[in-house]
Amino acid sequence: PKKNFIVPAGSIATETEMIEVMGKVKTYQADLGSYRTCLEDEIKQVSPDLEAFADIEKMMTAKFNASVEDEEMLAEDWSAAVKAFKSQ
Image: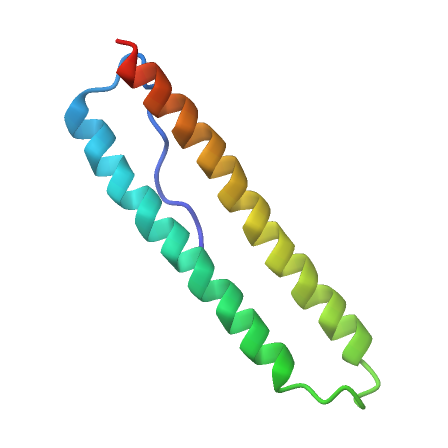
């Protein structure tokens, strides 16, 4: 999944903007969770006996980890925005 929104600068954002983006953050996090579940399901369907299994597993693990990193970065950005918003 691709993030199709920008976390606003909390120091100048309106409450309406923050609420709108909060919904998008939650949806994106759910999409990332579904994506990771899909990756896990896909690798289970690949036979470990397949010659390319190690390469496939490595690729799936990289995709999984990248989605976790995306979610962590979003959480940091969102947390900073909320903190700045609350200190307005």
